[in-house]
Image (cartoon, rainbow, N blue to C red):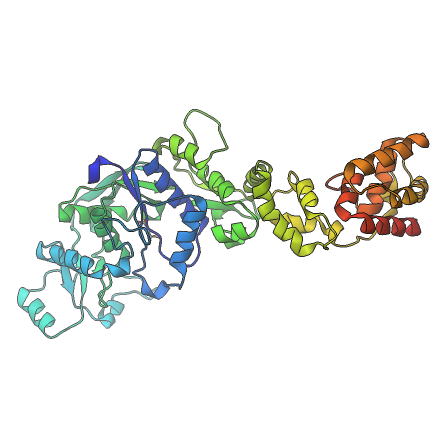
Amino acid sequence: MSDNKIVTRFAPSPTGFMHIGNLRTALYSYLLSKSQGGKFILRIEDTDQVRLVEGATDVIIKTLEMTGIDYDEGPGVGGDHGPYVQSERLPIYKEYAEKLVKSGHAYYCFCSAERLESLKDDKGIGGYDGHCRDLPAEVIEKNLAEGKPYVIRQKMPLEGTTSYVDQVYGEVSIDNSELRDQIMIKADGYPTYNFCHVVDDYLMGVTHVVRGNEYLTSTPKYCLLYDAFGWERPNYVHLPLLMGKDADGNVSKLSKRHGAVSFQDLVADGYLPEAIVNYIALLGWCPKDSNQEFFTMDELKQNFSIEGLSKSPAVFDYEKLKWFNSEYIKNMPDDRYEEKALPILREICADSVDIKKLASLLHTRIAVFSEIKDAVSFVTSRLDMDPSLYTNKKNKTTPEGCKVILEDCLPLLKDAASWDNDTLFELLKGYAASKELKAGAVMWAIRIAVARQGVTPGGATELMEVFGKEESISRIEQAIAEL
Ligand code: GLU
């Protein structure tokens, strides 16, 4: 193992999207290594050629880049243990499988597909019966010489138990009699995950295998491979399942029916990568002695430890993610916020709208960027007017009273010296004073007339600034005509 340092890896299969559970695995694996100054490797597990999706590796790399999970070795980055894509390592697996055949821990199996099929019951379930486990050497030679297709199987011990201590779940133990002689190398020469990930983890010096708990109970088989090779077993850190809330109040494995489950979909829905990372960091882990909820990546690296991991399933709560996201948006520096908000507004607003000003009114009011469109529908269209909006108890306004205010203010606004918030505010305040009206009543009338909805980001004069003079005047004229 290199320099006694922790080495972890993320070993996704390129499926075309990054499930949020996989991203959490990547994050925890990264954090475990980085919390101790270790190394983190990205390895692409693409040996299941049937499931390959074009461009899928790019999705993985892009996601890691966007979330700030940077790997020390992997595709595109290089390193001493490459190649880092399994389909480019086929000769290595072959070589290591042959070693186990030689040492008696694996064997060639020549059983035909028909024979294997016949071992299954009517439900299609049935295990391999070990038919080729002890073929005489001459038969093997002959079959190989004849070019008979074969797979290589792991020779499981028939008795005893195999156990290991998982760092999260504790001891896991299995009766060897329950283990099938699983395939290591398939007839087409491709290795199975069950075999090649072990070879890779060893050759890449991985000290801690961090992954989903669906592998918890198959790990004894992998331990037996380490033992067969005479290699030191790595530490295992299996992570609890991510669940989603069902409509009936129960929980089940997080899937599409709960909402967006891929990183890309969440980003497309307006979530920020750093908010997503912060939220999923807490789905199965918590800091030891604090209730801290907000973490930068650096803080996560400082605080992460295996002891903080939980073995109970974590429930993905979209509302909580939304809350995190709104806090992250609020705290975004203006320039970064505008980078995201302005293009959306530019696309949907008329040229006369001051989108920079509008964006700033929305800054503390949206939880996800995708809410912007609805939040400004009162700007992009003239909503149906509900006259009862003019009635406001606190400001003592009525539709009739508002009509008078609007009629009085219209010429004043037309003559306004300039069209900015301060000037407009002073102008309306002056008018209110001259009529012994509450400034609030005047602002109320104008705000409703201009926005045509009750709740708005910003007050009357801010909104007029956003709309510009022409549109504001036109909206007030329409409001007067309707009253
Ligand atoms: N390719 C496997 C997966 O995506 C990796 C499991 C592991 O980390 O060992 O599930």
